[in-house]
Length: 374
Image (cartoon, rainbow, N blue to C red; front, side):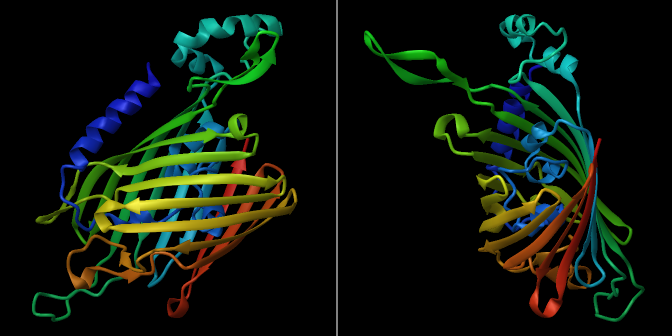
C-alpha cells in the first residue's frame, strides 16, 4: 500500500474533472459549517493547527498529530430551530501497520531500532497512521409548505448528512534540509545538521445525503490535506497547513445539478509562548467566488483552562442551509459572525469546549463540544 501515490492519483482525477466545470454557486452548503467549539472560538483558523478528531473536517492531515484514541461530539444551535451535530472517533493504527505502509523505508530505520535495544519501538521520527470516522447532521425544524400558486400545504422537514472516513500519515517525507558548518576545507555540509521535514498527509472520503420532504440527493467527495512544522528551518514554533475540501462530482436534486462547495484552504500557526497560540487561515471557494481570512488566538493561563477569540473577514454573509430549490424550502443565515469567542476546560482525559458567535438580530450561534482521549 502506497499512501502518497493514492493521494496524488485521487487529487489529479478529481481536480481535472472539477476545473472543467463552469464556476457557479454551489449546493450542499451545510458542508461549509465548521465543527468543534475550539475551532469556532478562534475564528475557524484551524487548517494548520488541527490536532484532534475534528481534523476530519478542517484538514485530514491533522489526524496524524494524534497519539491517543479520541472520541468527540459537538452540538450547535443555529437559527430557525436548526441544529448541527457532529460525532467522531479517531485512533492511531499502531507501529505494525505503520511499518507495513512504510515498508520501503524500514531498512533505513532498522539500525536505529537495533541501537535503541528495544524491539518493537519506533524511532522518534517514524511514520505512523491514524484512522478517523465522523458524521455531521444538520436538522431543521418544521418548514411551511406552499404549492405553485402559493397556497399553504402540509409542513415538511429537511436534513443533511455527511459520513466521513479519514486516514492520515505522519513521517519524514520531504528531502533532507542540511545546515552548513565551517570546516578546515571551508564550508561543508554537516551530517549533524541534516533534517527531514516531518510532513503529514491526510485524505478523507465522504458520503453526502440531502433530503427535503420525501426527495433526496446523494453524492460523494474527497478532502486532501497536508501539514508541515517549520521549526527545523526557521527555528521558530511555526506550522503550516493546506487542504482541498469537497472535491467531487456534482450532485443532482430533482431536475437540477449543483457543484459541491469546493474549498481551498491554507493556514499558519505560531506558538508564541507555551501558553499563547496564534493562527490564521485564508480560504477560497471558487464556485461561490468567495475569499475569507480568519485570525484567532488561544491563551491558556493554566493547563486546564483556555480562553479564545477570533475574527473572520470577507464572508459574503448569507448562504442556504438546505438544498431546496424553491423559496419555501430554503433558509438563510449568516455564514459566519465577524467575531467569535470561546473557552475550554480540561479535566483529566476529558475536554469541554464552548464557543459563541454573535449574529446581530438573528441571535447567537452557540457550540458545545466534549472530547475524551484514552
